[in-house]
Length: 282
Image (tube, rainbow, N blue to C red):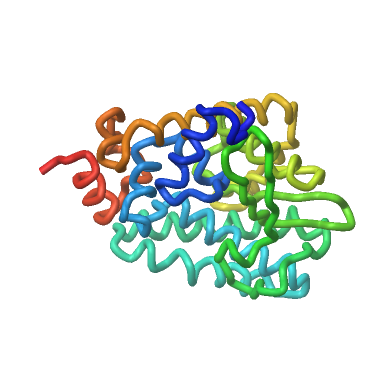
């Protein structure tokens, strides 16, 4: 659909976005709606500060350590690892000790692998606001995409940008090697980024090392068939628009959605309480 005010359906969907205060979308929001529609509704509600979930924190910690050592190529690796540890440790403080130690070691191994694989590319071009150890998306490179098939612009923050190489890289830190469905999500992200600025896009996946953390594990994923993934984005954004027209409040829309209490995005007391309120459970 082309979102022209001359088209009644497009006008209705734009009004639904405005009703919920959505003036822009991000890849993260689009993926969140696809991955867990109840969690997307939670984000729309007053519970906007719900927790990322442990996988999100691991990803932030990994990126924090890697990027610090890429910008400062002379930084000792142990110092870069410490940036990651300083971030992740508070999110592990109530965890059983054995699991906590495993997550710390795996995060350390991801950071070391990422530095080893990415440093040869040189120093990335970061915004002036960036500083070592930052995990704020506002300290990443910002791009905006304004396709006619989206009712609102799409905002995009890139982990790493190499202007002289025409290259963007996004860092991922999953718990296991990504399956084809997850790689498809990486490609959807890449298609949006490439459409926004015409740069090449790669995803770097940092995995926990094996053999007592001596053997590195990682994978690279180049953007394939961007047109197909942009069509997927069109469908997902269209579905979000239709969803938002189902009611005048998050609670009204929730009546059409089956909640998933076991999803990692509902991991945490704030998120669980928000779910109870949105889905009207006692």
